[in-house]
Image (cartoon, rainbow, N blue to C red; front, side, top):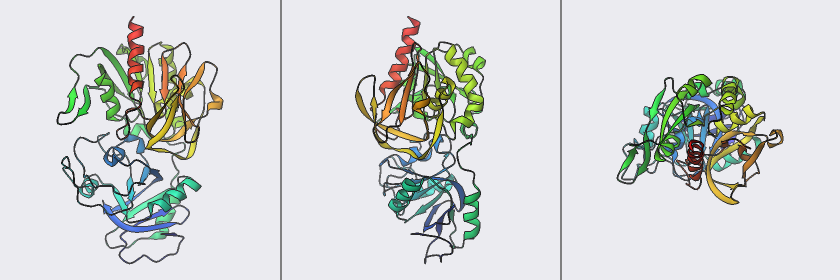
Length: 389
């Protein structure tokens, strides 16, 4: 149910989503008590809610899950993409039920409470999703109070005062603060995560909010990964003498993070080292090459997005999470579009002619999502192998 102020609280409602325009969506509260403010977006994936909630790229956002059965398999200690959840809260169609899965160690409700995440359940998520799709991702406040008492005017005012993601640098909030080495490889049934024993390549990853499964995919192909903070200088990156350089995913406006990252990336491109970027890393690589980025109305978030790889002519189903994109009209000479969204035609990948440099806007590591795009990690490894000779 949505309306504009003033509106009475429906009987039994213990949570509300208040949008900047005064719209209210009432339901039942779950997870932590309190209120959070952020950009309200939607995700269309049918699986992997725990990975989504812990994806650092969701910093500053409140996630509306389109799939209704969120929480049915509980949570565990393995399906996480960041040390702590970056999302500010979530919105669900159905109430959270008791988990039914052999891997579950804790219910989603308990997991949300332990991590301070506010949740709203029992609303028509289809209606909210249509509103976002038609009018763009709004600023909103998600509030949960067991007594059902809210200062609605204050919540709407708080939502209206929130500046939004455009111009916001969030990478600093989710990046590591110290350099560390990653050697964990991909998960296997009954075996869990593996370990890299004999690395063949050394990759330095700039952490703008890196998902763990990206690092696992690199390690699974024989790459020792040295992860460095987002603000690391080009000199410090190259001091590690890497075979390749990786620019990670992350949240916020690429132009804002690019204030300090783009000069670094320009130097790394000029170094001649193989370079691979994903999501925010892709967008900031484009900025470093002379292109521009823009804020999308709704963004791409889900695990069912078709993308065409122009280098092979194949179509892959991909996992996505981004609210900014590269303006193809601003690509400079020598930079080619390699991947295109078949949903709306947005540029999804690029490469630099004559250099071992490429990037994609979507998430080839998935988690959650299909594994159609895992070949991109091998493409990066092949570039490192070719440079070794």
